[in-house]
Amino acid sequence: MTTAHGDNACIKNASTLHQTFMKFLSHLLLLLAAAPLCPAQNISFTLATPQPALIEVYSGSSASGDIDGDGDNDLLLVGLDPGRQTALYLNDGFGGFTEMTTPFPDASSSVTRFVDLDGDGDLDLFFSGLGSGVQEFAHIYVNDGQGSFTLLPNPALPQFQGTGVAIGDVDGDGDPDLLLAVRDQNDTFVADVFLNDGSAMFTAAGSTGFTPVEFGAVVFLDAEGDGDLDAIIAGTDQNGDPSTLLYLNDGGGIFAPDTVNIFVPLNANDVDVADTDGDGDLDILMSGTTDPFAVRTILYLNNGDGLFTELTATGLQDTFGGTNVMADLDNDGDPDLVIIGSQMGGLPNIYNIVYENLGGNIFIPTDTVGGEYIAV
Image 1: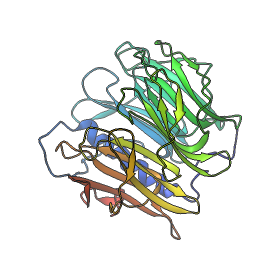
Image 2 (image 1 turned 45 degrees about the horizontal axis):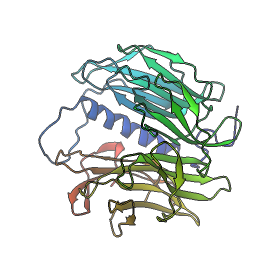
Image 3 (image 1 turned 60 degrees about the vertical axis):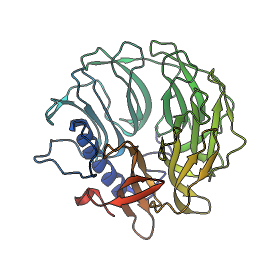
Image 4 (image 1 turned 180 degrees about the vertical axis):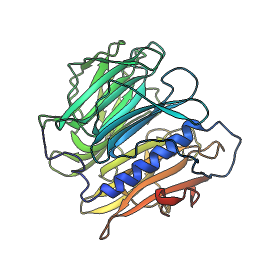
């Protein structure tokens, strides 16, 4: 079914941005998958030579994890170039990657997450997107432990494309559940929790407290330090307006909108959480566009009780249409930032910037990821 929210509908004239972002991210994932843990060091990336023969795609997704239990991270890449493609690569542990035959559909506008959904100790796959025949889908694939996957039908899941997916144990029963904030193949907005019975079978909880959005981001975090997963949902609501809200979990998977924090409403393209200031709680990094149109990248600091304050004068590049990653890239114990996206002005200005976290809420850009994958 072709809908108004097909490939790249939320970002006009942004194919170059998506292509650059996915190329950069595939190489970043390759570096992270192949790299051993090292002592604290400066952030520096070197493009491997020769390059593995990975597909270079845009308007898709990627995932990394040890799917065959051999101790190294394997890669899944999905997207357009120019047709829909999906490729799974096994890591030999020495930086070599071999493409494997899979039951996965070729797709775009996708979400791919490796996670143990059935509790057997290996990584299964959540995979949603736009498949052949321009048909939305949402699939669960279970892993046999050796990296061979089988489709497990889940009739309760809506069929959709889009990014509004979070996976985590919302009801405290020990298995990962789903929170979806998407528009499905019938153009119906869906904002609901889907509870896992422990065997990777999901049932809609019938949640009513969420504001439905599309083109958004959904992230779990323990906002107020009570031990359960709360949620940030940001995106475009049913009226076409930007929305960013925090939802608090009662511990049993029932969510209610937070009435204290007021976040800048964003047509958010990405949200990530990490303890950026080292005080033991999770802070929030988000980027997207406001109404009236402005591009923003915002870092909110958590005081530990779930009260967030916008950190001003961060020097972070305002972007939209890309992604944010917070990870300790220099092994000094704090998360550094990777901000990938666009700043509109005529043709899109594309940014792929790595910021080193110096502590004390000070971030400095580095220019150590070069070539076509970085613009500082």
